[in-house]
Length: 230
Image 1 (cartoon, rainbow, N blue to C red):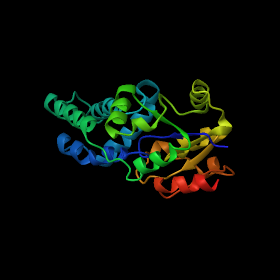
Image 2 (spheres, rainbow, N blue to C red; image 1 turned 60 degrees about the horizontal axis):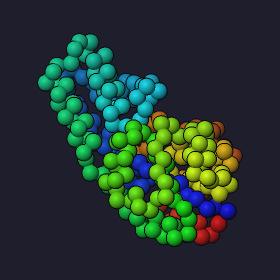
Image 3 (spheres, helix red, strand yellow; image 1 turned 60 degrees about the vertical axis):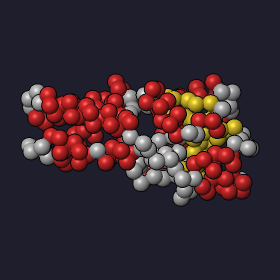
Image 4 (cartoon, helix red, strand yellow; image 1 turned 90 degrees about the vertical axis):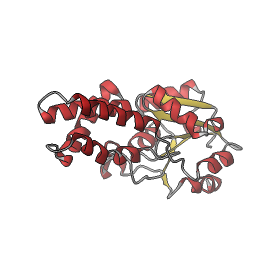
């Protein structure tokens, strides 16, 4: 019996990955001639993944990986004027208003009447706290958990800390790697809501999802009806 529902934040309750895509042409414009965009962003992806153990997730981590990648590709120190423009671009990203999922507030309002809701998101604490506050959705959650990684161990700690048994827990999110598979492996349930902008690092192989049981929805607004039928 499901008693507690966990929600992912970025690209589940609000759109955020799109910011990284929107900023790409601006980066190329700042750097100018001599930078091949495909090469830059391929190497940036690799740098981000390599730096996760040190920097974690988020825009600040992205900024450090971007500067490192530009320096490697150029083979010389970054021009100070360009560097300042990149820093200003990152500052703009951090302050950009994001789009809340159009189904989010209605869905949370409906479910909070029957279930305990908790928010489980990964990333840099201050950055995530600002987004949660700006979303206007924090009041629907009895607990907010910001973790460095969404692993089986991390979920076990979150559930234990909040007095939740896996059998009574269901997680909702857009990432099979972070929101679905680790929860199912510890005995919980999960609902997968794909998002077109999910980061490549969150992709999994078909073999990893083979024989794994979870529900999948087209959009967040379908969640109350799904739970009513369980």
